[in-house]
Image (cartoon, rainbow, N blue to C red; front, side, top):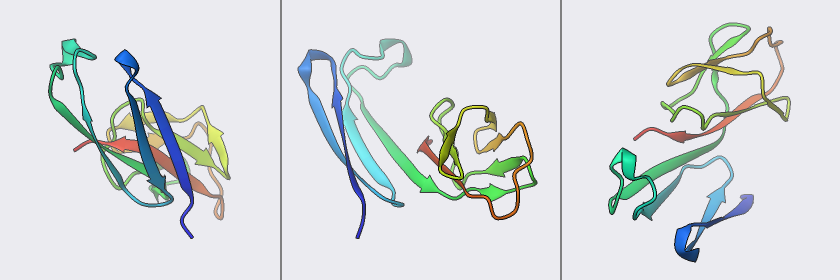
Length: 116
């Protein structure tokens, strides 16, 4: 049975978007953006984002890991043995590093917004 979570996002002008996020699957969201992020050129465009949730990254060495897809900087969340890790450093658009060695058998999962 898939775990369902609901994400309610209140946007400007009181618009609400409801997104079903299915455990360990890709979720695609189309958002019509109007006058929210004008300096990035998204005014009136459709923004397509893919949220990756509960991915097990590839271990490069005891500290370094890579994700399956490139992610938008600042959207990476890393969970070490089920606890959100705040000391992780993004080292590239598809890689990150712990400040300490992880141990064999430890669980590492990530969630992020994928770059299209």
